[in-house]
Structures are given as structure tokens and as C-alpha cells.
Length: 90
Image (cartoon, rainbow, N blue to C red; front, side, top):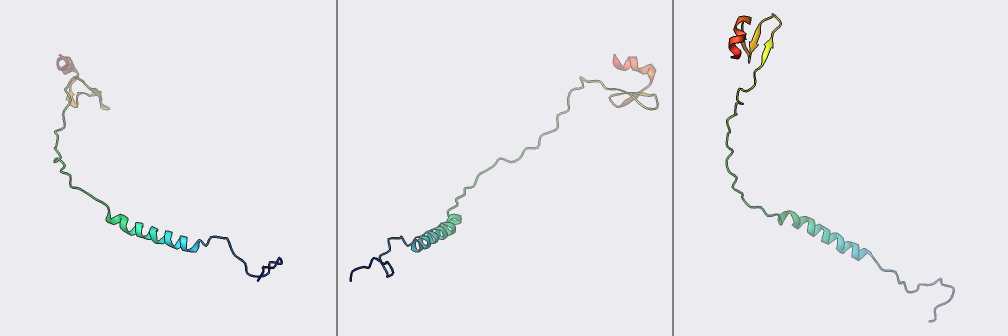
């Protein structure tokens, strides 16, 4: 009945068996993974309709003078002769 000092027989084991712990943790993980999509909540939001805004044309405070390849002039895209340039600016 006495335990031998040779250690060859079966003795008491003080190690913790982690297999049941891992089983329980995996079951809990599966339960949380299944219930998570079900717990999502949403609510309807009334968004105001999109308003179409008119494109604002900038005021004509800028004058663009073009010298074209054929030697003609244009002010803001309108063609002018050289003799009309003075009248167009005043």
C-alpha cells in the first residue's frame, strides 16, 4: 500500500486537465458568434430630399483677352476686330 520511492507506479497527478475548459470556451465562442448578428439593431432615419442647386455663374468681373493663332482677337470668347477692341473695353 505504500508508494514506492522508485516512482514506477501510478501516482496522483496534480496537473489541471484543460480539455473540458477548452470545450466550454469553444461552445461559448460559438454561441456568441451565432447570437451577434441577431442582436444588431437598426432604426429608420428620414433624410431630407436632395436639393438640386443651380450652378452659380460668377460675375463677369474678369476679362479674358485671347490672341488666336490666325492673328484675330477675342474677348471672353467673342471675336473682335482690332479696331473694335478699344470700344469693347470701354
